[in-house]
Length: 336
Image (cartoon, rainbow, N blue to C red):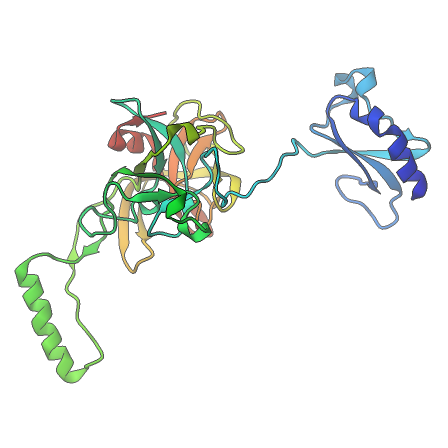
């Protein structure tokens, strides 16, 4: 063991001078990513990408052994700081925690532009930036504070990054009726129920026929210079694409970070539990494999070329549901 430590100390600089090498240590030599109990100790050399010797310069080839000790080359990719996505950011990127001051937390999906003015805006879900409002329920109003991080992650009014700028209402399957007849029916029904079951109440609800197309909203930043449009751990958005069945996709979200999945169905109509005892129907949706958890809502979903294809807003432990990005862009009059 001491011999290996001394050898690493002696040859470390030489190993780091080789292209692609990003780490050196000691461990049991692995075969097909598995090390057995009787495997010999080796000098472990970490490389960003494992390449055939034929593609390397002679100097960049890691020797099979050093000072009589076997080497083991392991591909690890780019090693980066893994910053928490739930902290307050000085320079705010898509992929981090954000939220309306009354909610828990969701994900900042993208930095977009108003089609008419070119103004920079923050894109996420209605239920992240506008508290799931239908526009008439008092859940949210234009100008409400938007916090980064979201309230669940410790965000307070001093963490205001912007204000609610625009949202598309989310219509539930049932809503509280506003008409006098419904109110009267509810009143008399409760009078009768109270006689036989005083612990119960009757609520009269109106069933709607409205199918939603998107769950999306925009926030206006207090300081546009704080925004970095580069999606955390993914990179810049490079256009827009239509989702196709079988397409490989990815997202950067507040809870699960960067995850990958595949489009399973398009042009779907789904019934979504809104988390407040109500349900809403969404049409023209994209169904993807499970690639998200709570708090990832609002994430922009991209293809392998970093083209935007959808806005993540719902899911289960088996699937993730996305709004078509073109619908989002059209309804909110935005561009990337």
